[in-house]
Length: 162
Image (cartoon, rainbow, N blue to C red; front, side, top):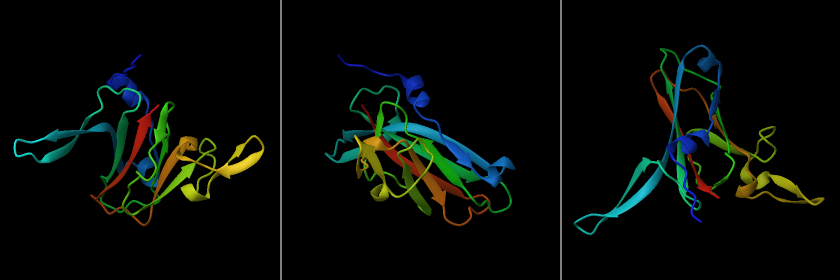
């Protein structure tokens, strides 16, 4: 049986939070889109890849979450942290996180603690084992340095619908 989820479900799957003093002061504009890659072959035989809205997803599909952070103030913003819970029924695609100028960390304990993916462990029937992408509950992007006035930052990752 094939299950499909409409656009509303795709957006409900994602909740992004940005913690920063600058945001509290109204300095940041944060937006998130959920997209999929579509590959087509042009008339010239060239393969073309483009991103489109993830209107409908089915198990096995990979979606791309992109969060844009824009500094809409006249001063630099600092202490920017973007935290994304990994939605239920989605698994992080290993190595897919991309965020120039940011440190990327993961959590396996509901967002209580964060570390590099390779440093995380989980308890498996009393035995500790290395965490896998399926164990991740959150992904966090920590900006190194300030975001200049008028500048934008991007954080992106892929997740597969189980």
